[in-house]
View 1 (cartoon, rainbow, N blue to C red):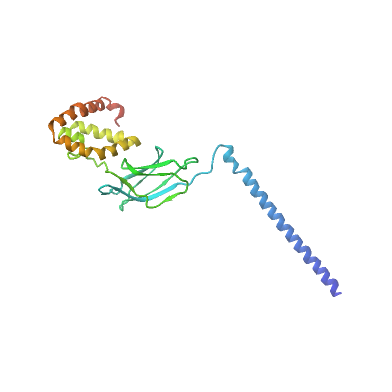
View 2: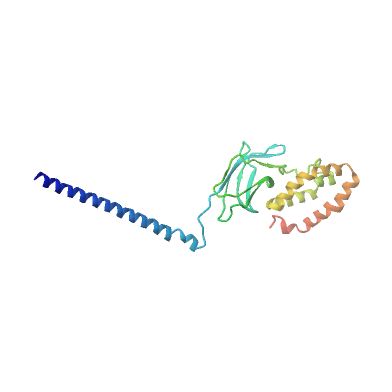
Amino acid sequence: MKDRCDGIMKKQITGSDWRERRAGRLVGALGLLLALVLLIGVLPAYAADDEFPPQLPHYFTGTVSTSSGPVPEGTVVDAWVEGVKKVETAVTAQSTYELLVPGEYGDDGKIVSFTVGGVQASQTAPWVSGEVNYNFDLTISALPDGSWFPFECFVATAAYGTDTAEEINILREFRDVVLLTSRLGAEFVSLYYEVSPSIAEVISQHDFLRTAVRVGFIDPVVAILDWSYALWSETD
């Protein structure tokens, strides 16, 4: 009798174990089937619509400075991916910055450049999805500070002998409205700040050179800007 009861219990336990194993296999099969449905039915939708999964931004952080020291708090730092502006931020009181530069599928390897206050920074980097660059310090030669042509440094003021001439005001406005709003213009401004001090120093010491530069170069440029003022100025 005992043996018979033991046999019945054994069959029940064995049957229960088999049912549990069968249920486990069924759950596993359903899970695998669901995963395949997601993989086959959802993800290829990107390819079907010529779209791709979103890319992670490239993170940059570090300090910002000129050749003479840190830049002021609030100075704008722009990030560009091969000439297309992607994002901007402001420099902190500690002369640091942080930028999350977004990108799209296919942007990997494209060059990221930076402008500080509209002036091209010396540093560039290839864009990489999800990349992190700590201590990526940005440097420029100098910041535009409103003194577009201080006497001891720049060609136009050296030629006119003053930084308050109306002609210089037109040049200042052209810088702010046109040059500093484009990458090539900002690069030109940066180059100007680098090369003009030595030229202006020579011009300021010779009256003949001052007259020649003013009449032969700066006056014609100012005349063209004045004539085309309505085309490039912010005035409606």
